[in-house]
Length: 312
Image 1 (cartoon, rainbow, N blue to C red):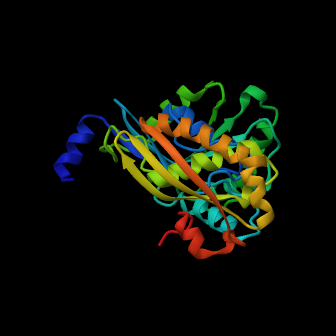
Image 2 (cartoon, one colour):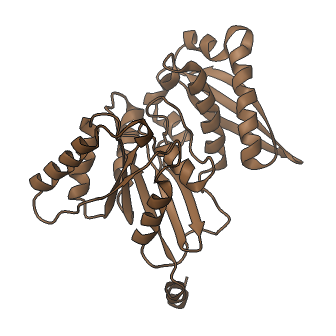
Image 3 (cartoon, one colour):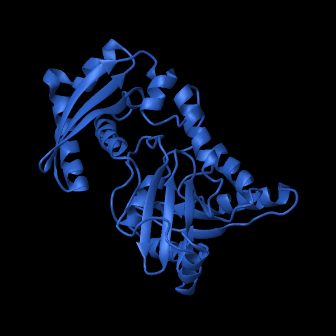
């Protein structure tokens, strides 16, 4: 884009930029982004550490464009995939125009919250705190405010203090005011993506994430983090997508759990995922899933690269 184009964009008053959405696992980051953009671009689950890739969701209106990076939740990592997720979340703040730290206002702060606050106060990038789940009561909000005050006091040199917003990603309360605040914070400049794009998340990863979300919903705490999903092949057949899906588990005993008694769980997941994907891609989607045992897949760099968790 030429300098003249940039100048014209500035004259029109467009404000566009990148917002990294960070926070500890399971505070509602993906739900909040889906609420803001008005469509499902990131998988949602009550199970922590659901998001495994950096997902770009794009909000555009007459004011400009806000590009959200939905990052994996930072957590205590005890295996290779966990460390990759944490590293991706922390690196996402570099090059962003704003960092949006999501906290759960209804629960006491954790070590991860304190770590983010300490980092962001000294990070050199403007940031906001979004107190989510205020529909459940904001009983812990003052403790979070005290934590920020402590981080400011302990920091050396120049510090950046956050702006606060209170929202409910579930009900939509406070989200409009948050969006207004985000646009105000964006730099003047042209749109970063074409207007008709909602996300640049690769199609195969989006399909895999929807299948994984359905398994999370059914398996809950029984197995979820032992499951990974890879799209092996996509064929376009008229107005229909035929998708071969590979589901990884760590050991043979887990294979039966993923398939279910007489294949019922796999069939149920297949039906539910096909409904969501058909709506997402505006065409019929037919899935052909099968399960593969791959011991310690979460420690295998080759598998992690195929799944999109390692970028080269």
